[in-house]
Amino acid sequence: MSKRSRIPLNSALVIGGILTSLLIVTALVSLVWTPEVPTRVRVAMRLKAPGELGILGTDHFGRDVASLLMVGAWNSLAIAWPAVLLGAAIGTAIGCAAAAWKGIADEIAMRVSDVVFAFPAVLSAIMIGALVGSGPLAAILAIAVFNVPVFARVTRGVALQVWTLDYIAAARAIGKHPLRITWEDVMPNIAGALIVQVTIQLALAILTEAGLSYLGLGVRPPNPSWGRMLSDAQTYLSQAPHLAIAPGIAIALSVLGLNLLGDGLRDALDPTLKGRGAS
Image (cartoon, rainbow, N blue to C red; front, side):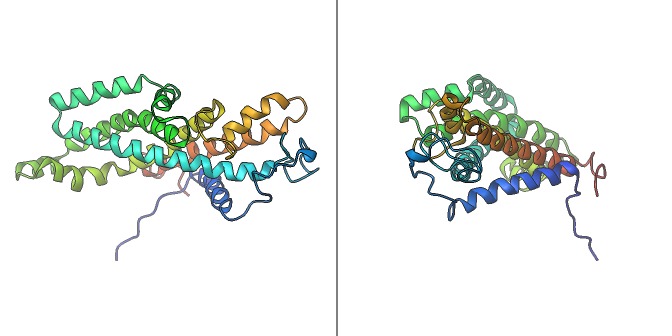
């Protein structure tokens, strides 16, 4: 009778899972319900304090801050997820190819990654925005480009370790093609490391998206964005500090949750750490 494997729990994994679940649930709920219509302008009710009108008050246009936060969660994920997955797909393919063929292919892949990695996501967004215009597409492409070298290096590092194992040498000895070895033998063994990296990069992507929207390079108004909410709140910090506090806490909790989830998954999936902190 075989035992069913399970991921051992630890505090980082539990707390990170709860915070990340709250983020995802909030984003999904915003698709079908928000306390108020997020784009509804009520100038007569502008800059109301939390509890005076709505749970989190209103902004300088009289819009409900809680509703803006909920829709902003969806807009953040709608940019962060595709960007990270696109960067992960391309970077993983490059890293696997570099590990499988080594030599000149490895050298070219790593040098190209160094060049791409030299451009931060904000600078990439400015360059891409000049070509395709600012907006969600430019933000997705900029964050994806930034993630490609990250995943290429991570994939290459863990894949090279797998390629040194005896069963890989046996597969090569019987003439198994490197592509088939990569797909059937290498990928299953590096999937855990890639999943952990996705969660960590997703946290950075949400932070980057907020920064791009803050600069006007991300989500376009009137669509809500946490970064744009922070930008709009600058003028009213003395009158209505809740306009900056609410999106700031939302960004901090989202990034914290995903980082804790990544750390928890790393501790749970790393064979050298299993059993530590498990409950």
